[in-house]
Amino acid sequence: MHDVTTGRDVDALSGRNELSLLGGQVSVPFPSPVADASRATGPREWRRAQITYRDAAAVKRLVGLEDADAHDILEGFPIRKSNSNRRQRSMIGERWVEKTGALIPVESMNERRFVITADFDPMVLRIVAQPFRFRVAPGRPSHVPDFLTLRRDGTIRVVNVRPVEQFDAREQERMHSFASAIATLGWEHAMWHDLPLAVFQNLDWLSRMNVPGAAHPMALEAAQRLWNYDCYGSLEEKMKTDVPREWVRPAIDRLIWEHVFDVDLRMPLDVHSVLHRRTS
Image (tube, rainbow, N blue to C red; front, top):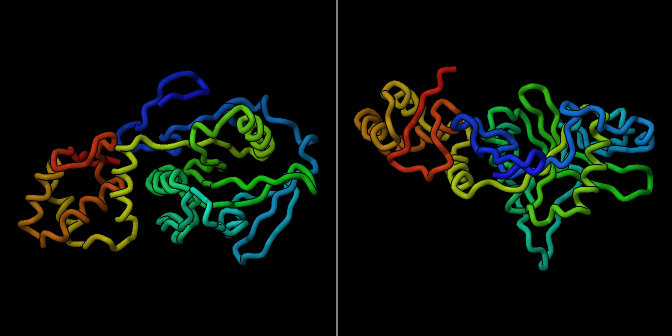
């Protein structure tokens, strides 16, 4: 994967399952406020900017940019409904997110891939779709970002999902302006494009286990007790002597989803995939 910001190649995975939100193909053609605060536009330029969102009671709120509260927005509802029509080529639907404990709307395959990635990412604590509407000034055109996330280090990150071929110069300029505005709040912004196919296929398979209780507790215990630097297939065989065979694979997959076991997601999962046990 190529980072257009630095011109360097970036691994899709960092330390097996340490799959960050930026682990997919992502471009950030503008520095985050942490990386280069000097690029953030001052509050004067955005003194008329507004954010509209729906709070935890689904009440619509309109606030000035400087009064936006990310945590209030994260507890709320999407600012608009996802509408479909016969000519629409993208996918409309909902995706269960364990970290949010709810279905959230997705409007394309890329958004679906992003949501699965973010739900799996141990650095992401919360994900909200279509979190707010941003206007530079009353009466001006608006922008609804695709997602708002809260990360484990307390960082608030706004994410827009686009196929890389749609991220042209005009879109970069539009996103640069938007990112400059939210940088005044200390929020980060990223454009997320896609995942390597093998990584997505593995995550898509594992994501069926993103519901607590999807694996039997006895099987989860057996997998952890019997593991001894095993590959997927050898641990399966050991477990079949202790628990019903239909409990085995869901338990292993749930432990990968929970990051108890690590596996190299860049290769298709099979019986030869080596399972690594987390030590912390």
